[in-house]
Amino acid sequence: MTSLSIGLDRAKTTPLATQIYAAIRAGIESGQIPADAKLPSWRDLAAQLGVSRGTVRIAYERLVDEQLATSYGAAGTRVNGRPVTPVTAARTSDTSPIPELFHSFGAKPLPFQMGVPAQHAFPYKLWSRMMVRAARHTAASPVGYPDPRGDPDLRREIAAYLGIARGIRCSPAQVLVTAGFAGALGLLVRALALEGQGAWFEDPGFPLTRTALTLAGMAVTAVPVDADGLDVAAGIRKAPGARLAVVTPGQQAPLGMTMTLARRHALLDWARANDAWIVEDDYLSELQLEGRAAPALASLDQDGRVLHIGTFSKTISPALRLGFLVVPMALARSFGDVAACLATAPGAATQRAVADFLHEGHYLRHLRRMKRLYAARREALLRCLRKEAAGVLEVQATAGMAVVARLRADASDVAVAARALQAGLAPVPLSPWYVQPPATSGLLLGVTNVDERRLAADCRRLAELAAITK
Image 1 (tube, rainbow, N blue to C red):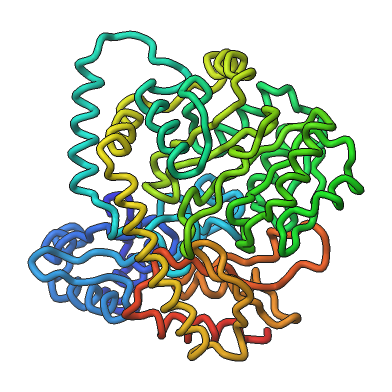
Image 2: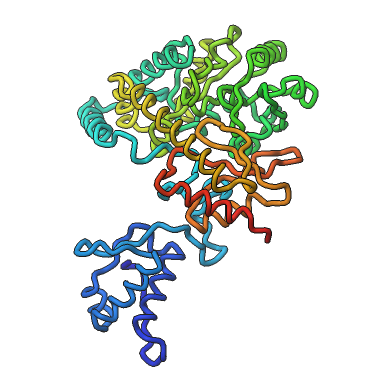
C-alpha cells in the first residue's frame, strides 16, 4: 500500500470517500495492491490523506461490499484474491508465457486449476520441521561444493522409491537431481547432443514441453494418440528419422489413457532399431486414482534407450522446483559431466528435506492420503457436472487428477477459460494442447483444489460462462 499514491482533488464534486475507494480499487485490479495485502487502518490512512476516519470507513465498507476486501475487525482489512487485469500491454514482466495454461505465477490456486496439489492437505507442520532440520544440517556441514548430480542420500532414496512404486531397477549412480522437469529435459538434450534432430511428440501434448523442444533446436513432429497411447506406426510414417520420442505412457497428458503393453514394446523396438531415445515423462508418478499405477516404461527397457523423468511438483509442491532424471548406466558418467558444467542440482537444504521425507516414510503415506482425497473430489466434480452443467459441458474423460469436459463445436475454449478466470475459476483450455486439426474444444478441470462446499455453484457458474455465445 505504501507504493500506492492516492491523490484527492477537493475541488471535484466527487465525494472524497468515493475518490479513495476508486484509487484503491484501481490498485487492486491492476495488481499494484496484491492479494492478501493489509490495508492501512482507518486512522493511519485518514491522517495520511488529511480526511476524517469516517470518510475512510465509508470507502473501506464499499470495498468490502463489492468483495474486493475483507474486514477482520481489530485485525484490519485485507485485499481479496482476484485475477489481475494488466493496466497496459507493456506490463509483461510478471505475466505467464502461456496464459492459457498458467494465469499467474505465484498466485493462490483457484478452483479447477491444474498442476498444483491440494494446498490444505499437505503436512506443513511436519514439513516445516524437516526443512528447519535440513537447513541446520546443511549450515553445519563442511563447506565445499556439493555433488552436481544431487545429494547422494536423495538419489539413493529416489532409486529405492522407483524400485518399489514404479518397477524401475536402477542404482543411485543413474539418478540425477534436477530443477524440475524443465531442468531434466534441458540436461538430456545437451548430454545427448540432440540439437537439430527430430523429435516425436504426443498430439495432444503439454504445450510447454513442445515449446521447450523447439527452443532446443529440435524439429518436432506431432504424433497422434488414440485409446492405446502414442501411435508408433503413425510416428514412423511421419518422421522415420527422429532421434527422440517424448511420451507420457503412465497417464497420457491431457487425455489420461495408459499406453498399452503392445504399444510400449513397439516404441522400444523403434528406439532400438533407429538408435533413438525415449523420454518418459512420469508427471503424475503413481497418483493413479483407480487401482494401481502401471509400471513405468523404463521398467521394460532392456537396451538402455529410455530416460525417465519425474518430479515432486504434483505430489509435494511445484515451489520446490525439484525433479529427477534416471539415465541408462552407460550414460551416467557423461550426464554427470554435463550436470557439473551446465545444470547442477538445486539447493542442498531442500534436497536433504525431501530425502528425509522419503526415508522416514512420510512421502508414501502422503501419496496414499492424496489418492483417496483426489478420488473423492473427482467423483464429487463428476456428480456436479452431470447435475449443474448437463448439455453444456460433456465429460469426455477422467485423466489423472483432471476431468476433460468437451464444449460444443462452435465454442472457443480459450474464450471460455478467459471468462472463467475473471470469475475466479481457472480451467485450462484443451485446444492449445493440439497441433494438428481438428483440435477438440474443451476444458481441463483440475480436481485437487476444488472446494466441495462451493463446487455446485462453481460448476453452475462455469456452465453459464460456457453457454455464452458471443
